[in-house]
Length: 320
Ligand code: AVI
Image 1 (cartoon, rainbow, N blue to C red):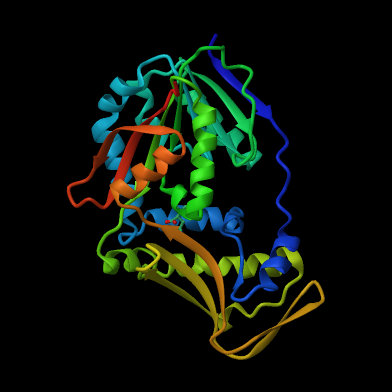
Image 2: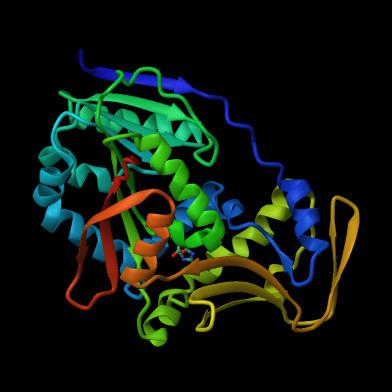
């Protein structure tokens, strides 16, 4: 039977207020990057992906397009193709004709977007079973509609693994290994270490879209938590931290100022920063070591000619 089914695991809404107050009690102050993605932030992120300086999206899309049949050979047909954090389900469309999975299982925390995006995939591929699962992908989830023994291929594109701290990345990859299960595999996009000038440019596009994406965090606090940030008094600052192998994004207070959030006041010194994101970059070997620690065995890596971005096929290691 083909068709579309929606499974709601009722993910708990993250507590924006509590996490902002916690993050502001630390030094440097921070806001967890998961809060970038409200409706405005998600559209700004899609616009970032179209910027000429932001090479990861177009490079990964070209890799998927050029190697879809090689990927399908490794993955086999008739598997369950599971995509945690599926967003607009754009990239999976490049894999479906070659992979011919038994079913596609997009998973996302945003129920409304998931339902729309997954329904579009079901319309476009009428032969395909689509089981959309609204869930928090960082928590364990059961997928009872997947028959016992069916091969599971997990697809995690976009280098979102880079937004986890390395220890958390290992923990999350181990969760993906659990999700894929014995005999399963992971196809994952990972951004590579490269000339810091290229990296810095990717997070400082000339149009100012990344700056708007970063500043939207403060606008979101104003909208949702009765904040009074003067967003014109904060600057977007993104740079490559070579020692830690990561892009860091910050919002820097351009003057001494007091901000109130739901009646609570916070002082900012001139030059004081709010740390909003890390985006770790890996060498191929660094990532293989991380994946092995999480229970995967590397099978194949595809990269573009300039070695900007990598796509890894990893199988779940069967112990014993
Ligand atoms: C979602 N993630 C992989 C993006 C990145 O490159 O780390 C988020 C982003 N932040 C600024 N630009 C893009």
